[in-house]
Length: 417
Ligand code: ADP
Ligand code: ASP
Ligand code: MG
Image 1 (cartoon, rainbow, N blue to C red):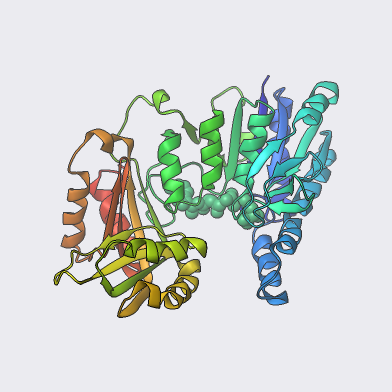
Image 2: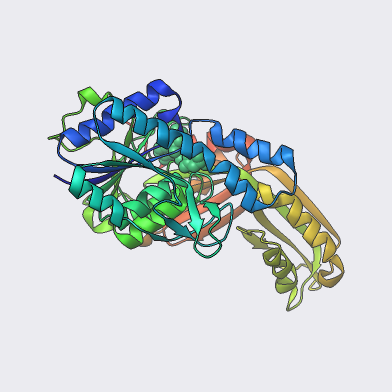
């Protein structure tokens, strides 16, 4: 007997049939003797619709009201799943974030969890074997008492936080793929499923574009030591043998992985924009004059490339920002033009970042060099490069993303045999 968290994403609860399917998965674990807390997302597409309504209601809306609106999607699925479970004879009740509560800071729209109270859930496991069905994605601001949401994909983080709070043996993330692959299996059909992946690698994959897990959920799993299993809700509940280890990908500590490859995965993101500042003065303080105002405007700057000045007086500086921040970044720089001193701004939103990740890179030289050669052989021009201990990224034209990902996937021997 164990204590488990089972999280189901949007496509897994897309309609009543899918919700009934989820109820059968939950019943399977309950019948096997486990105490279960379920975390649900909104039905597929529901959150997008709610976000769109907020935008149409007022372009510059109050983010506290945005949260009040977008948190409702999860309320619906939590209630529906509790009803479906009761229909199968499983005692269950729904919980909203504010009812537990799940306390957060006040960064409305992308709040961070500060505390989860799991006491009442544990009490009900012990007293009546009651399944808790918890609305993911939402919380309560610890001081103002207002509803918050955790950022897109945030139900993953709700699930891991609850797993830590109730000291669950494992947090199962049920989704529409049967594990974590070497790259997005929808782009590269030869992608290989991994049995295990280290938290650190998953963190890089997620931050660099693989949306299978929200970044913060992996961070939390790593710091609170929660084993996370990514698996499919599309596997028939009746076909699963509870006495066998589940099939999927375990996200765990590096020390639990016996065979370590140099490169484990490739991630990509098309939500990137590039800004080049032409003929900026080459003197101390210029970087501060540029990146200070951008930071004040909450623009997230990523890759930065500065050319060596040819004339000793001016140079070009290129960097990337998320495409959602592109217009704000340009406006901010235009306003600061006098203080910075540059000739003009060039920008592009048709760029993508492709990243290669692997803990083995710590101890292997020349991994990135191989990629540069392979990309050039496919006439893929590299606009910028960044490297760190266990990954490197290249910025390329967005139209070449799939080709670049496939090329690198093959290059590093990741294609399925
Ligand atoms: P959910 O609605 O269950 O939260 P998401 O859509 O957020 O599901 O995440 C699952 C999707 O992540 C998959 O459908 C897949 O296309 C995508 N994905 C991207 N990179 C990877 C990867 N490396 N391994 C598995 N899935 C990935
Ligand atoms: N429903 C929210 C979203 O679509 C949270 C989640 O599904 O994880 O972003
Ligand atoms: Mg998700």
